[in-house]
Image (tube, rainbow, N blue to C red; front, side, top):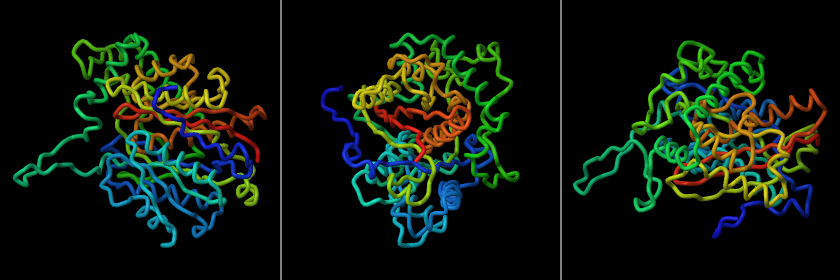
Length: 404
């Protein structure tokens, strides 16, 4: 355990199984490069079709939704959860709540909904995340004369704690944990190849809600690159630190995306006739040194697994947000896991990173894979979703696929 932190794991379900939070549906938009096919869509335009499709797929009456909880990192404020809910056709009686924990926002929104379910009352929530990096507003502070000083990103911690850019932090992790350039390139190439294979096999199809792109319908992710080869990977120069190991090829790219889930109690899911879902066994968020922010997910996952008495090597599926290959490898090895076990159908290195949406995309990917695994093997699945966060944090969720 990290001193000064207590696990944010609900204990209500330990005494009342009917209040066990369960995710009964999960969908996402295509994940597309920022300033690309979805560049004309603002955050609510990305999210509203996903919310509407979730309601349609589960036959939930819009008026039966208790709240819409959505993560977002670089939007324009104004409570976009409420805006997107109304745009999706939910009645004015359904409120909305927007969550900002930067890259962890989507996963934390789902965690918050799960804790509210565990608290009682059999509510039903739509929860997830969205990011339109293409349309994110320009940001500025007023100086003492009232003039505007524009900035590219917010500061995440006071200057005495260090506040490195993401790429510099990834270099810090690579150096501190001895992750070589060769290993980073190898991991990134594998992510692309897995994503290309998954797309070709149609494994993303059922989880994607098509959107209207600049040149017509967009029905698939545009990031995975079948043309990548080791020789091409090796040609990329260091992107953030002179002589470094982190390159554009072993880093994720910015993406526009939305993803959301339906969260309710076990009792209500059964009453609705739902046949399966992901039980939310627990969630945890940890803080770490901001100079090594990429390692945050490992500390959150370590605490969460310990609190639930789960050994990391017993996990069936691991979805980690691959912002950088260096921090992905470091986090997984900190947990004693072979990095090859994570993201078996590709991750953010191939698909892209939609900031506030990415944590929810992890959960959507887990449910899709767990359902397919059950169809193929008849077995349940124990899964872990984990994401590192700017400012030196990480969030993790432990999920179990079950027939209800």
